[in-house]
Length: 175
Figure (tube, one colour):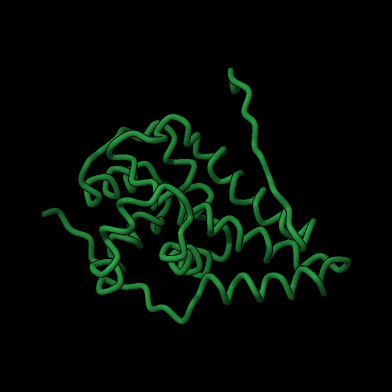
C-alpha cells in the first residue's frame, strides 16, 4: 500500500506508556490521512488536520481507559488531557473569528486548537472522524478555508462529517 518508509518519533515523558499512547494516536492520525502529500503546501490548512489528530488522541485515550487493566492510570491521564483540551473554551463562530489568523499560521497542535480537538472527539464519540480524516487523502491545496472544507465534505461518507460540522459550528463561509 505504501511505497515509502515513514519514521514516527514518539517522546514519552513522566507518564511513559500513557504519553506514548497519546503521541502515537496523534501521529497515527497524520499517517492515516497521508499528511505528507499536503505538508507545508499553501492551502493545506494544517490546523484542521491538527485538530482531527488531537481528536485521535482523546479517542484513543478514551478507548484505552475502557481496558480493565489500564482503567485507573489511563482514566486519570484522560481526565487531565480532556481538561487541557477543554480549557473552558466555547468553540463557535466568535472563537473562530478571534483565532482565525493564529489557526492559519499554525503547523502543529497549539493550545488554541486543542479545544477544537475536544469538540470533534465529543461530537463524534464513535470515532467516525477517523473516516473523515482518511477522506483528506488526495485533497488538493485550496487557499480559501471554506472551499477546502466544502471539497473535503464531498469526499466524506454519511450524513454528518467533520468538515460539515466545522462549516456550521464555526460559521465559515466563502468571502
